[in-house]
Length: 355
Ligand SMILES: *Cc1c(COP(=O)(O)O)cnc(C)c1O
Image (cartoon, rainbow, N blue to C red; front, side, top):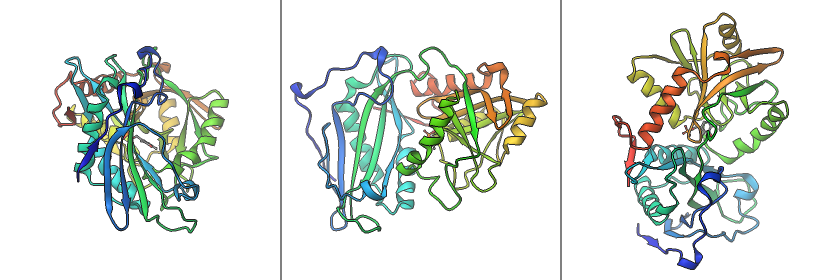
């Protein structure tokens, strides 16, 4: 498939935001990658073009029934000023698994990788060169057929937009306070919890708002059936260091299979640690905290990489983890993953693609 390149003119380029005040997802770069799909033509009209609005029919199926999937990954500028992508193919392969679950077409991974490289090259000057900052990449697919019947759309749009994002921890790597909910659930067995699909996030907002009102940063989700086993924290996977083991819930269809999660499991194994993927109940976590065996809790995801948890609240129980300070393991994983991402540490698993 040929990918057209239509670069924004000098006059169409936007002013870059100040590198110290990037925030998350507020300043889109100058270009985007777009590609259309129809029943008749398959994928067609692939192009890297200037960032612009879409004209959409008000009956477009995504607006009514939510056939929408997305991904999130980052490009990092190394000290040698080259640009590094972290495990991009893993994201596009996961997107294809989300697409399958949502009855959407498979994307051609090699072609999309070519499109992504062209896009990042067109917007290379949007990749920040500040330590901790990066270019966040958001591949998305939406159903565009104008029709109000509930069935798979016969037209889709795939696109990639990017935005520079600041360091997740501008004031240092600080543990967060987490609210455990058994009132709301994120995903049910047989549902779409393993897909990165828009509706999962719409459904999660109310619990997050209530947790924030109560003074917590994020929600920890329990399983929908027994409301007993830990699933995820906010939009991150979760790990518990208890005794000499590191435990994370298994991928059983209700949890998003995080690429950071998988990378952390691999690093822990490389270091000779004991990592176990098994069900862990919230009571086991609080009991381990009470008898002094709970050493650390941390979340994993592209945005924060590692997010240490300093405190948990569940019903009338509260616990503090590692005295509310960042644990050694969280710090080591964070430093190591960042080191690989910025091209400063050996990439023994070939996770990084350098442009
Ligand atoms: C994206 C996401 C994650 C983290 O996945 P990464 O590939 O590590 O970024 C975890 N949980 C949910 C619900 C997510 O949407």
